[in-house]
Image 1 (cartoon, rainbow, N blue to C red):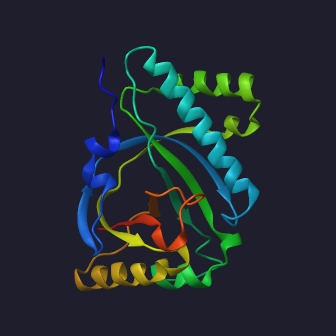
Image 2: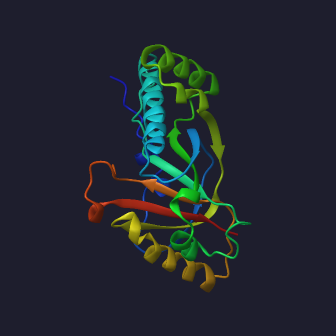
Length: 208
């Protein structure tokens, strides 16, 4: 029996964080991803998650048949906003002052290195044929290298993330680091099923 690849165990620095800010080095990684804009409580956000996971499990099934089984990874998100429209925002003030409807995002699920762009194209066709999920047409094969980053584990509801971001901002200031990428969240808990005060989310800010 072939062992199932679990990326959360293989890349522990990527998928674990302490409850205080720390500086880490993040490796290049590949993902399936989909972009959107708007409030995460809206249906279009949930629909994008469905498209991502349907395709991720289709990829898993195809690779399991080739003795390359893997655990479907955690949901992640990159977040940004129009910095001309909302000027001079810090990572803390942006999380409070920019309306949720104005945030743009890229939802991600990390893939093993052996999954290719061609594999994704086949999986998209399969999901379209079997489930008719039109949004899979918008899925992309995405590669990202974050490099030096500050990260910490936020425990609790998304509404209190500003408290953790304040700690990250102070850490950046103390260590004379500046932002060098998009705000990144890794959802260790399923926020559809977990009580808000028990949610665990890695917050990450690439820096230089």
